[in-house]
Each structure stands twice: as structure tokens, then as C-alpha cells.
Image (cartoon, rainbow, N blue to C red; front, side, top):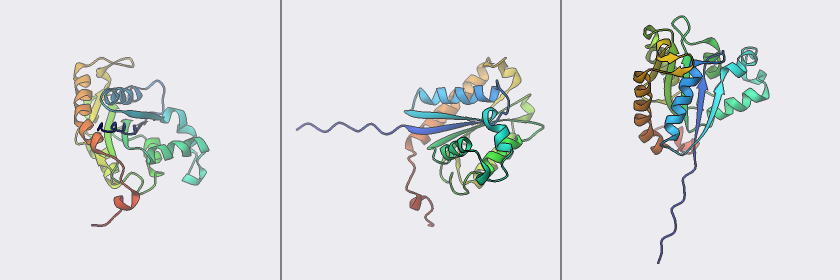
Length: 198
């Protein structure tokens, strides 16, 4: 008696948020490199939320009810993602306002238990701690599961808008290798189970 074929698991929905309000952007290049690395090892359906495309309309909305329909759709994509790549530039030692404003509008429990891979870009290595001092606390508040390893790229790691540093490429590869086991094991549980109090 032959066994029935194993069903192919559904594609993981990954949403990469690129927090730069400018195009072209090294932050977007880094986010795309992380997507490419994950796609080499996982069955993904990837979407990019690029702040460069929505920053002006996003900034004009004081609350979620004021968002244009196309931004509301992208916000819902973030909330329904199986995993998130959160990539941001660093301006004057901190996160850009539009990036923070976007996540201020996310539902308070929408990202609970969602794995998040953190990444950032900046002018020099002096900004690298933004990942641990600002990005990680933000997603901890949102009850997300942040990967222990983050990826930081300085201007010197790029040749224009191409990654030229072997060190950064190795860091991306290491992050992907660390992320894959977590992402493979993660399947969004029913909402009632996610919010269950032990």
C-alpha cells in the first residue's frame, strides 16, 4: 500500500520593512539581501514595505483611521506576516521618525510571537548599537521574537548601492543560518493560543 504524498507546506509570508525615506537606499539593499538569503533556504512569499514610497502620506496621518488605503493594506501585511525583516537607517543616533510612526500604528498585539530579524545601516560603526538599544526594545514591547543576531552595515560596507564588504556578506549569511531553524519551526498559532495566559 503506497503512502500518500506529503503536502507541501504553505509559503512563509515574510515582510521586509525598509525604513529609509529616500531612494535609492542602502537600507533597502540590505533588506533585499536578507530576503535573497532566506529565499535560498526557505519557501517564502516576500513583500517589501518601502518607506520611500509611503513616507509623505504616512507622516500626514495622525492615527490609523487617517491612513490612505494603500498604506492600510501594507500595515495589514506587516500584521499578518509569519516573519518580519525590520531594517532601518540610523539618523543622528536614532531611528527615523517615519519608521517609528509606522510601528506605532501596528495593532498592540498584532506582532506577538512573530519572529523578527533586525537590521540597520549607518554612516559608521558607531551607530551599530542602535539594533540592541532601540530596535530590540521596540519589538520586545510588541511581544515579538527578535533574533539574537542583528545585521549592521556601515557606509564603508557598500560600493554605492552594492554590498562590497566580505564582512557584511558573512554577517548576512550568519544571520540567515541562525534564522532558518527558527523560521522553519514557526507557524502562526491560532490567535486564542497566542494570547492564552499560562
